[in-house]
Image: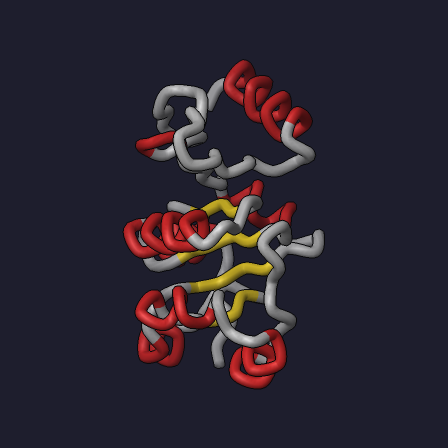
Length: 157
């Protein structure tokens, strides 16, 4: 991406408090689909560097791959695993139950959350599920685990 490609991203994040805000039902999300910045439909997608920087902040990173994938191939450091098939139920759990099951504080609907998977398909679905449940500060790492391991080794269980 050229140097000019980052200006709109910084402006968007600054205008929205540093995170993309999910559109309310019936509200336009604004912006056309753009490769590298926004996925089809205007959903926010992070690059490796952006995710790496966000991991230095208080962001919850949820990997929606299946448990066997994590066991076999490893995971992105500091991510928690909630398989896609469990996600909707997990995001509606009692906070105490969520903490017991996932060893992590349950995110509020206004907490920053990033979803990832192997290569972006399941994380895009996870993003849609979370938005439908009212989560407003959600993003995806569309490159997923496949992209992460091009830059650094995974964390093994």
